[in-house]
Length: 152
Image (cartoon, rainbow, N blue to C red; front, top):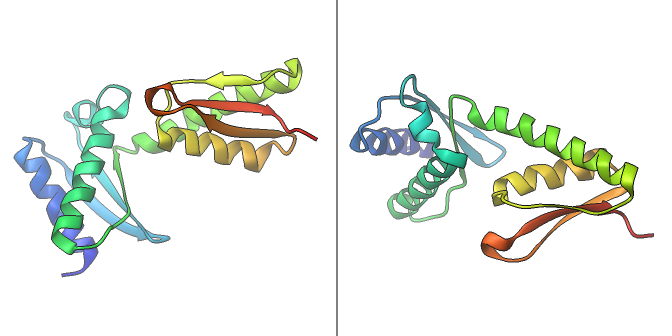
């Protein structure tokens, strides 16, 4: 069975076991399998507070795939296009903070972002602000994202 079919069936089975009804579509793009879940009433529960449930479901699907296929498969799970809206929100935050750093010439530290969210902000700053840099510092729950003027 092809990876796409395995991922689709495995995700359907998991959601059914958890008591959720949803339509699932899986696409392979750039070596990553995107799992799009369309859910009417259950979407907020599938996403969870601060998208913790979404991240947890993604980890569970990844672990189940590794167990079934025997190799690591990169997946990104999304519910009702939540990640696209999240990306737009994060880009807005990045733009606001970047403008503040440019105007005040002072580093900005952002806390409480997941690795996925930090990566989106890092990529946006790198692509759109040549005079700025972003990096992460700290460990675990204390990890911060820093946006600063590039050092000459």
